[in-house]
Length: 261
Image 1 (tube, rainbow, N blue to C red):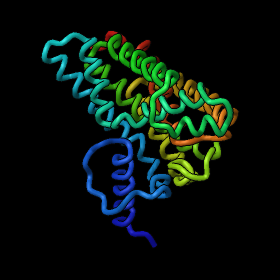
Image 2: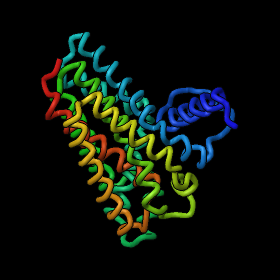
Image 3: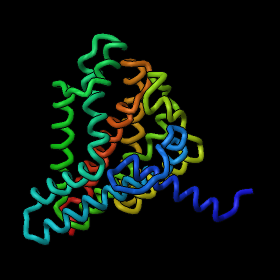
Image 4: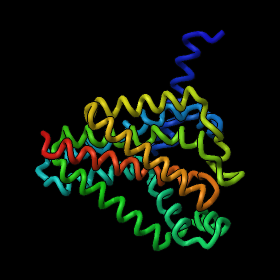
């Protein structure tokens, strides 16, 4: 029988694993994180994402207090999130774009996605992602509204990844996604609920409903595209999906929070 103390310890461990995976924060961990541990702890990825959003919000607030214009504050906030995550998902977006755009067949696409060099498709995808996110934050232009948008975007963008891993098979027999396997149903459902809660609390119920519809559509489209291109999903595909989700949420926030205090 699991005691309350053991349950709390397990939740704390899952949270630490998720933060270690999503960020560069120097948390101590006794051993290397195994794939099955990451799958189990994936429910906490939205919590880790909210922490990343909070880092960006803090930098935006300090920049505004120093008298910097919204455009510069937005750029600094975006840079802070990149530093906090070590460009984890941006790397996936670039690799996925290079593979899908430049590969001749399934094997060639997978080989390109494992190549650390940046190609034309990847560079263009990164530029577009950064431009859209920066423009969204700059147009919102209010410290509290930007904080809500960043927390919602980074928390909810990671929430659908667990369901994606459950329904879309791995494209490889090795790699991060294959080793992690399918996240347990409780972790998948918990992540989805946390993402929906973050959207509702930060952006309101109407915006949350719109964002969830967009995220669901993006996930279905990415699932179909991934199966067509490489026969399934990889860690790079998951990173690209996170970036797409983040952009969609920020665009929704831009429409509803623009000009907030």
